[in-house]
Length: 316
Image (cartoon, rainbow, N blue to C red; front, side, top):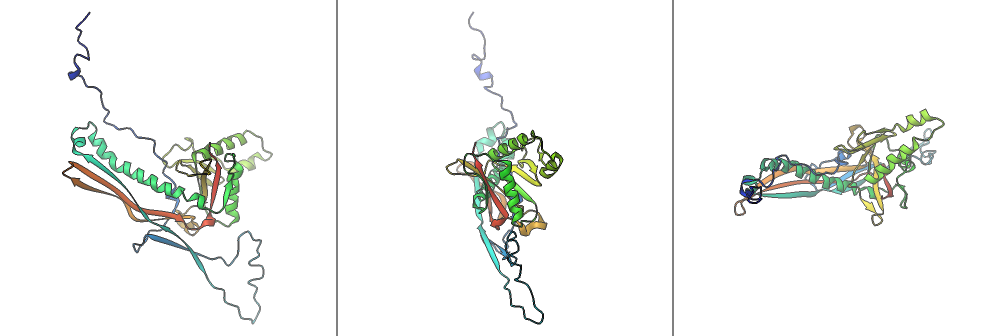
């Protein structure tokens, strides 16, 4: 037969497609580790933040008492010589982050999902700039002097994680720690814990209580990227962690949290802001468009190198 009436013959009357007014999201980066950093916003407008800290007169925590065994012995009726109270400091800089979304009038006048576009501009920009800031924080991990792990072809093991946790305790880092690990490291660590759990321990109950393993039921598929808690340390996953040795290794870190007021003096990494996330609009009449300008002035840096530990392992 011929001359049937079809979608092709009635092209002008048939929509080419139906557009869902709800716009789906892309897979965004996990929101960490900036929430665990010590907040130190400058009050004088300076773009350089200095974090002073005391110089210890007690020596190293693990020096077997060498610095205090006789140094402070006193003798009756004998003057005490002065001991200077000294400070050191660490500094970091605040920089500007920004993104420009220029939206033409045609978009708002003709797009099926114009309302969704407008509603998504601010959260989308906030997520993007937050990812940029979190990447800056993750890029600090290789700057920790102390390191656990292996630059060879070894995956992240339980022993590597334990080494970092124990080293921090032996250096006298008091308070709650947090671990930020690359996705590969989370995979390795969870696989290692699963494999270890299949072996019978002599003191199984004691081992279980010490490890206190408490995995997230979604394996870290949540906004913050929380993956598990192990030996009192919460671990988060993040693909923003940097690589090393021509991308043969990935680098995470375990460090003292700075967001807990009671242990602020133990913080390993600090952050400062001169401008919180801000939206401004500007009309470009000749372009028939509106500029949406999103900016923030923010920075972070290591404020106490001894209070964090780099964790390095093989990249899958």
